[in-house]
Length: 149
Image (tube, rainbow, N blue to C red; front, side):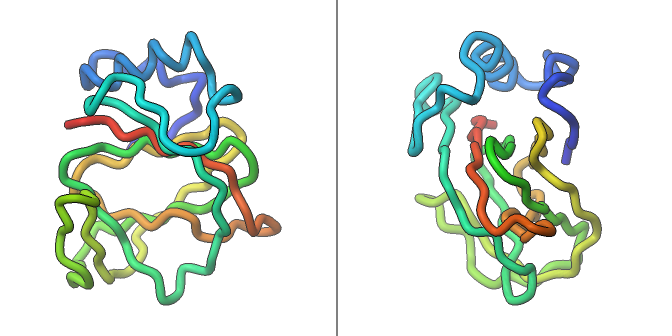
C-alpha cells in the first residue's frame, strides 16, 4: 500500500505506465468534475468508479483483493478508514474473475484515513477493507481508480 496526498502523486511517476496516465489525467481534469458511476479514461487500462457509500463498522466485514487491477482510492467528500492486513488470511469468497475480487477474513494490521485529498494505492493481491466508519462520518463520496496491472 502507498498512502499519501494527491499533491504528491507526481512523485510516483514511472512506477507503473498506467499510473502515469492517471497522473496526467488528474492534472488536466481533477476530481470535482467526475460524475457518479464509471468513467473510462484509457479503455481497460484505466477507469474510475465514483460512488456515494455509507461507511460501516469493520466488524463482520471482509478484506478484498484484486488480481487484474490496482486500486487508487480517494474520498471526494467525507472521510473513511481503510484497513489492511499482512495476514494470515482465511478465504471467505473465492476469486470472481468477472468482478476481479476475492474476499478474506483476517486481523487488521494497519489503517489509514482517506479524505482531505489523501489517497491509498492498493497493489494487486493486497488485502484491504475500505469504507470503515471514521468518527463523525457515515457517508462518503469516493473515487476508485482501477489501474490495469
